[in-house]
Image (cartoon, rainbow, N blue to C red):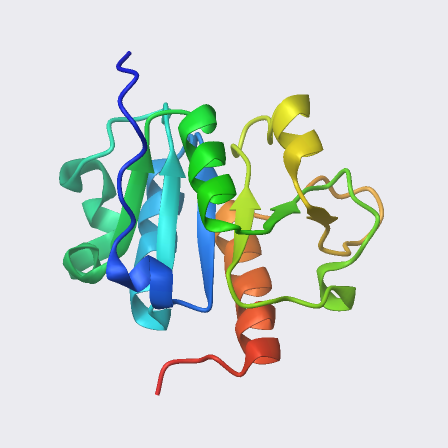
Length: 169
């Protein structure tokens, strides 16, 4: 694996009120759906590799459809490169996790926040959990494990955009 620096963010990622980060996603259909949603809401997506699938148009096409051409995303070679990007740009990391006690509806989102979501299969490792500036959960009926990644992403991103009055016009 290369040790080159993290890619330079696009203009969209700098101007967008919030961004989404996917930590080593496992399921291409979820990633494609999230890229489609982000394209429609004019959000930037950070994909932290390695992914559990080949990150290319062919694997994402079914869920992302023709929206992939209009999506804005940056691939980061590793967690270390992504963390360096966040530190260099002063982004606050808001981790969605079932291991949190604060409901996402009680959070006050700020412009520049990055909403971080873990792998569908195992979430994020302890070092990523510890690095998050804030940990948020989606309240659910007791006994349920979690929601689908794309649904969770849409719920939290929508609330952040609502608070910031930042939906595209």
